[in-house]
Amino acid sequence: MNKPAATTPHRLLPVAAAVVAVVLWASAFVSIRSAGDFYSPGALALGRLLSGAAVLGLLCVVRREGLPPRSAWRGIALSGVLWFGFYMVVLNWGEQQVDAGTAALVVNVGPLLIALLGARLLGDPMPPRLLAGMAVSFAGAVTVGLSMAGGGGSSVLGVVLCLLAAVAYAAGVVSQKPALARASALQVTTYGCLVGAVACLPFAGQLVRQAADAPLSATLNMVYLGVFPTALAFTTWAYALARTTASRMGATTYAVPALVVLMSWLALGEVPGPVTLAGGVVCLAGVAVSRSRAARADAPRAVTTAGEPRSEQVP
Image (cartoon, rainbow, N blue to C red; front, side, top):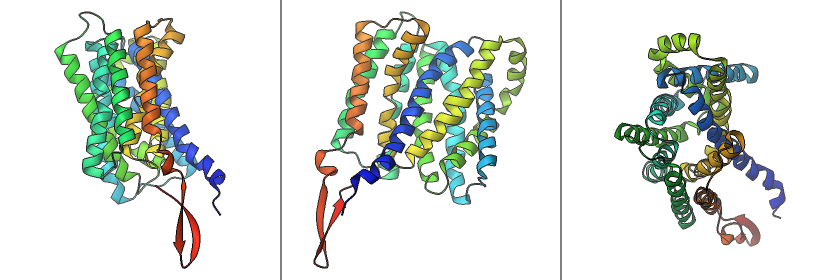
């Protein structure tokens, strides 16, 4: 006999993990803007990664997590260099060159690239609901980006940097997915963060000099970025990614622009206009569509085996 109620908590855990990751990544935009006034892009990325690696390393010791298996290291190394290292540096740099709206708009090419790379390299399915939801969310992201864009605040260099960040983000997610089949989410995140920190070590001199002059609030923002949007969010993301497709997880991040608008409203008193609010609602609606399933997909199907009917869930 089917017991769908018993599987409900198990199904909700990845969703909750994805929500935690997306909310914390949205909060990172505010902290990056604040700390970026006193830290250069490379120094900020290195400080963030070192803070995150310290927390993750402590968790690995407490949980007695060993080294990841050799078969997982390729994905860990690629995601560490591309997503933890290169992505954070170019995103920090890009946000210094363009306004927030343009940055959000260009970086949101990432989920589309994840879907294409996931289908090509990982064999991820592309159901119509996922494609429709991504199209709706991208339209919402365009609306938010255009409504927040300031006149003259963009540069060709900034747009190119944000586009590079989107490509690195997509490639990092697709690289991380196979590693999660061989190692735990905590292992993949911890050692990916360490790889990213090693890649950013050339910025160590800048970090030391700028930390001596930066106000405490900027340094605390950098530590916050390491502990929460990096250590916690990347781990919950990896946990959720291990239990669904890269394409579906990528679509979830379309909620970030809507959450950034809400957080800026609540934390900074930046009242969004009606067009910005509408774009945020459209982003969330698209995420809901992309995460939903057709009604028939969750309906039990009777399968006869050796003359005895049994119930089976359609994947």
